[in-house]
Image (cartoon, one colour):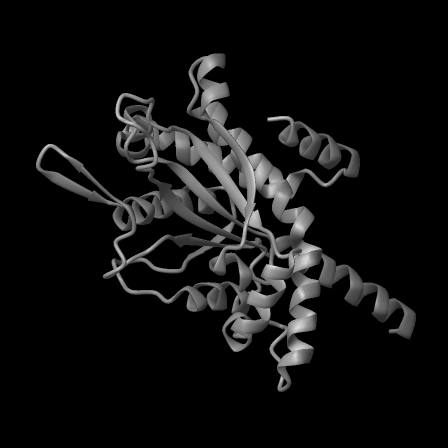
Length: 271
């Protein structure tokens, strides 16, 4: 077999193999163990964020696996899980996406005022002096398991910063798809849609700082609002929520056209 033919065949088979290998998605159920997260008391029962995020993440993983994706949860039981270890799992698996699931809560409203409701999705903001300082302060913690892990932290931090910068647009693309999908699925009327869309936001989240891949943090709704309780706790509400998020992830991989991505980001920014 000639050298050129060998190269062509190897290239072809490697391309086929990469196509056949389903993308790995890591889903992170927020909190766990002694870290209960938010708590909500209804009648005589206490509902904990750590339990809801695990249940939602497990159900979401099943739907995504049926779509053909490989899904790994950072925790599958009510266990303590350090924030650094969660992204280490994703980095070592070379995951294509990292999605951290949380439930929102707020006590910052006056008596008689309307309780907050709705969906908000966060991406990492690492472009400020404060974020650069935090990245430097964390050093080994955010480099653990990363391709940026180096004997000398200064080199690793530079590489890590470049990784975060390169993932920014893809993270925003994913966040916009999730935000728009969840708002639509949990908003029966146009008025609801307007109230429930809290937008794609940026924050200096420790959990997102360690990820080498596009990553988002989803605040699935507010514990204290009756509408969000329905979407988070009822079988019908959960099914709609989970299907919407799974379709958003699927769309992320399917939308590759630059013009369509730009239109998506512009549409997302208007809300």
